[in-house]
Length: 215
Length: 377
Image 1 (cartoon, rainbow over the protein chains, first blue to last red):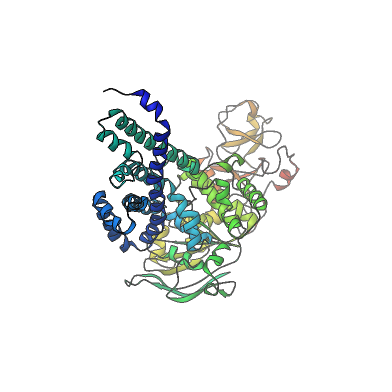
Image 2: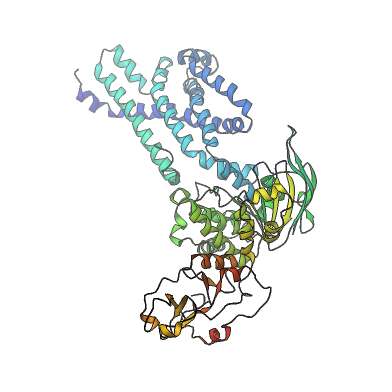
C-alpha cells in the first residue's frame, strides 16, 4: 500500500477541519442521549414496569439501519446535520438507558436507607446520593456510546454530513488510498482519545470508585 | 421519651409485622428490641422515624405524634445507624459525618470541626477524614456510621443491628466504646439486635419480640434473666440464665477475707494455715500464689503460681469474681482496688451468697495503701 505522505502534509487543514466536524456530529448525539437517558433511567428505576418496554423500544431503534433512519428524517430535516444526529441520539439510548438504570441500581440498599433516614427527601437523595453513585457506570456506558457514535458518523456522508466520512468516500471515488487510510486512522484516533478523556474524567470525578469499577 | 401506643403494622398481603405494641423508651436510656427474625423489631424501630407508617396506633416522641412532623425534618433530628454502616461510598469520611449538619445548614467550618471532634470520640485517626469508605475496615466503617449519626447531636439514636456484621472481637470493642460514649452523651437510644447477649450487655431495658410482632416482655436485663415471662423468652435467653444473672450482682457488698494474704517478707513457716496463700508486695500488689506445704524461707523467694485473673471490687460483677475463683489455683478469687492493690480474697461459695450490703475486710488497710498508678490504672 502506498501512502502519499506529501498529500497528507498538504491537507492537514482540511483533515483537521473534517475531524472537528466529525467529532461534533458524533458527540452531540451522545450528549443529547445522556440528557434523555438520565430522566428516562430514573423513571424506569422508580417504576420498574416502565423499563422492559423502554429497553425494547431502544433496542428496536438500534436495530433499524442508519440508512433507513436517514431516509425517514430527511423528509423533516432535509440534508442537514440534524438528520445524522437524530438517529445517532436514538442509537445511544440503547446503551445509555440501561447504564443509567444499572448505575442507580448499584446504590446499595443500606446506602439508600441511610440516606432516607438521615433526612434526604426523594429529590435530594436522587441528586446527592443516587446519581453521584451511578456516575462510574453511566460514564462506562457513555464511553461505548461515544466510540460507536464516532465510528457510525462516517455513514452520514451518504447524505453529505459525515465529517471524515467525506474523505473515505472521496478517496474511494478517486481510487486514492491515502485519503481513505488517513481518514480511517483519524477516526480510530478520535475514538481512542475520546475514550481516554472519558476515562480520565471518570477517575477525577469518582476517586472513590477506583476499587469498585474497573475502567 | 418515645412512646408506642397500640402500634400495629399489617402489610397488604396480611402479614402482621407489629401486633398492638405498647411500650416506653425512657429518655437518656438504652432500650433494646430483641427477638427472632420476623419478630417486628426493625419494623418497630422504623415507625419512630416514619420509615414505616403504622396501620393503627401511634408513636409519640415526648408526647408529640411523629406523624405531626414532616418525615425528612423529623429524621434529621434522629440519629440512625445500620448494620453495614450504609456509608455513602462517594463521600469522604469527613463528608459522610457532616451529612446531617450539611442538610440542616450548618456552616462548613462548624460542621468540619464537629466531624473531627466526633472522629476522635469514636476512635478514628484524623488522617482518615479524607479517605473513602472502601478504604476502611468493617469496624472502622461502623465507627464512622456512629459518628455520622451523632453529628447534629440528635437527642434520639436508632440503631439497627449496628454491630452484627463485624467479627466478635471488634464487636465487643465497639459495644464497650458504645457504652462509654453513652455514659457521656445520655442519648435516648433504641437498639435492635437478634443477639440476646448483646441486648443484656447494652440494654437498660429490653423488649422481647416474638414472631408475629408481639411484644412478650419488657424488662430490665436482670429481671429478664431471673424471671422470663414465658417459655419463649426463657428459650430465647438460652442456657446459663442463673450464672448470667450474676453479671448484675455488684461486688462491693462482698465479704472479702485477708486470711490468705501474706506479705512477701513473711516466712513460709509462719504462713501455716490455709493450703494456698496469696503473696503480695509492699504495695499489696499480688505476686502469686504459694502452696504453704511446699514453701520454705521468705515467701517472696518461693516458687509462685501465677495470680491469674482478678476482679476489681465495686466495678466488676460477681460473675467476673466467680470466673476468677474458678481459674485461681487456690479456688479463691482475688479482689483488687482501682490501683491494683489486693483488697482481699473470697471463695467461690462466698460469692454465691451475695449480701445486699456489707462491710469488706481489709478496706481500711487498703485505703492506706499508696497509689502508684494514675486513676483507672
